[in-house]
Length: 90
Image (cartoon, rainbow, N blue to C red):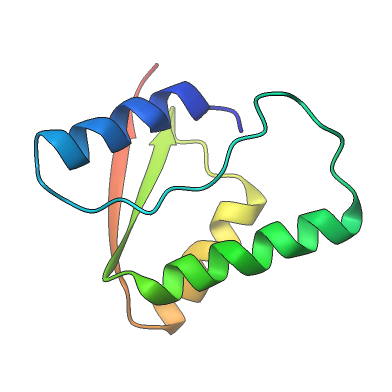
C-alpha cells in the first residue's frame, strides 16, 4: 500500500469529522509475505466490502491508481456504487 498512512488519516477524518462509516482495507504493516492464495482471499474480501457500501472513496495521491484499485473501480461501477475521488498532490 503506497499511501497507507494517508488513507488512515483520511478514514479518521471521514468518520470523526464527517460522520461516515468507513470500511477500510487491511494493512500489512508487519510486512508479512503474501501468498497467491492469501492475495486471492484479500481481493475477495475487498470486493465483499464494496458490495456492502453505498459509495467507494478512492484515494489517488499524485494521480496514482494501482491496477488492483482500477479493477475495484470497475467492479464498483458495475454494481452501481457512487465513486468519490480524493485527489491530491503529496
